[in-house]
Image (cartoon, protein in one colour):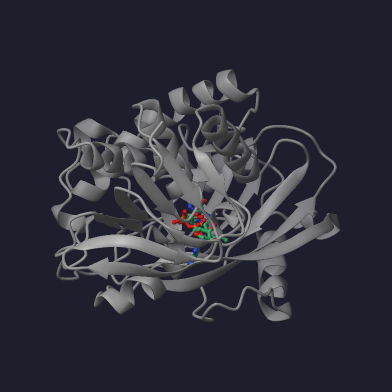
Length: 372
Ligand SMILES: Cc1cc2nc3c(=O)[nH]c(=O)nc-3n(C[C@H](O)[C@H](O)[C@H](O)COP(=O)(O)OP(=O)(O)OC[C@H]3O[C@@H](n4cnc5c(N)ncnc54)[C@H](O)[C@@H]3O)c2cc1C
């Protein structure tokens, strides 16, 4: 094995770890460093909602990234389970896109994307789900919507990386990338200077801090999301409930995750009384019986936002051996397998499954893309 890794990945969230695993499967010597423990930031905090997508109907590069990811999720989960014994909880549980007012239409951004759906009138909705608020006027049922348990998925990824001899350095904050001409020579970290053939920046919401001294400020910023976890004590699988940017994710074991806010609060990771009160109000308005559920835990995570909601994937212009995979905003779990696939292909000089033009660091920004 080479003394220095072929690829040094800066940031061990879902993006860094999944890419490390894909690269290691291809025989690449990879090292991942993280300023704290692996997978404890946005990737841990997320709700784990996975939307179905169809390659056949993918019109944009982002649709393709989503569709490749969706295609990979089931086999990825199975492989992780086989290799590590950890079940990431990937589950096709179905979802209901709801609206709360009669004049409002439920979101149907997925229409025309080849995704199965069923329109439910208010009567049909209440016949099937009598515990939902009787005032909900209608919904779409999406039978292929899925979820996974983020902490389990991250544990499985870490174990799978370790089993493939990926070097893992926790508590190793990167302070700066040291540039010499058109190459990164090394990175300065808490654990000294580290050197590799190529570097992949996957530091989520913190990525811009490391890019800025190199002259790149693409607009990756933290967008705080708060979540509260309820326990109903009632076991059973049921669909996700989606209502604009808010949602309920029933976990099957009686727990229901209620999310989420979208706040510009800098790098402040705290939960706030106002946001949690609002989430609890939302949950009880949708499903009145939740007023009696126990509040188990509240947390917040910092999503890596980008100006148009799309991630930055590709080479950093002007620097031959530096690559970036960051800015996945509300969909980083969902987009992680496709991201890992295409970053592996790029780093190994293989044919790309998805054109990366739309994800360039120096792209012009269009209107924000949607994300679940
Ligand atoms: C409340 C909430 C709900 C969400 N729900 C969903 C959902 O349902 N579905 C979905 O697909 N996505 C969801 N997301 C979004 C998703 O979680 C993120 O897009 C994704 O986790 C981003 O992954 P990442 O690896 O880029 O970032 P992170 O998970 O934040 O990982 C970045 C890593 O880099 C490390 N790092 C940072 N700076 C340095 C440094 N200087 N040196 C070394 N290491 C460093 C950090 O410690 C961290 O471990 C949600 C996010 C939140 C907050």
